Amino acid sequence: MTGLRVESVGFSYGAKRALDGVSFVVPPGRFCALLGPNGAGKSTLFALLTRLFTTREGRIEVAGHDMAGSPRAALARIGVVFQQPTLDLDLTVRRNLLYFAALHGISGREAETRAAAALDRLGMAERAPEKVRNLNGGHRRRMEIARALLHRPSVLLLDEPTVGLDAATRAAINDHVHRLAAEDGLTVLWATHLTDEVRADDQAVILHKGRILVDGPAGADLTDRFLTLTGEMA
Image 1 (cartoon, rainbow, N blue to C red):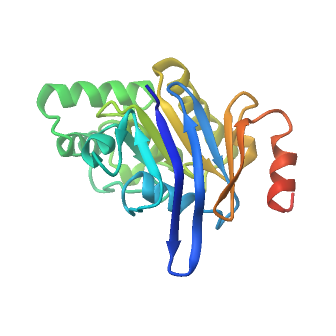
Image 2 (spheres, rainbow, N blue to C red):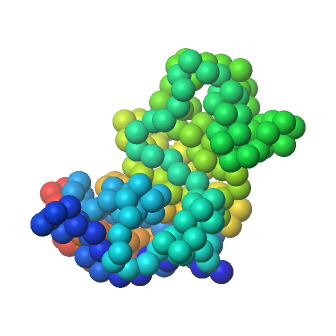
């Protein structure tokens, strides 16, 4: 079964073309980096993948479910970490997770078990009783990843998840997510403009001005190719 399939997707803001014929496939267990400079169309694509926006142009399929025809089934298979934090700062880490679990119809002992397992996997177990506002940026991001995994999705979407974090924290979170793909078989789409977050054997999709320029193995020369294709300055 395909993890994530995007076929000929297009979207416009009035006369401005944001996405034009975007197509790529990410199989289960694959870490795919969606690369592009600011304004490339990454955020618009994420809005379509999470159904914040809809379009009649093209098709999006999540774990075998068509986003337009079966939106609830498709969205149920997605875990999302947005660029902007969406945590309740006045609740504890545990309460944030249990609240999110309840939104997915998970409660009682099952919710507690899943929350504990997700936090443990991300090295956050000891933070469960702390209020979110007392966590640093890296721990908040790890918590958001743990939250996104509570309902056991097939596809994990992360939109610029390391913005504002220091290099060591960025690397640690990136390592965690790579392991989720390799060990749990998650389909991962990691949107970024930072080529150092991408490994040579990752899938790389380079988006520029709403169009796909590259879709394939990242390779050792990704940074040079990215700068050349997008005209970005090193």
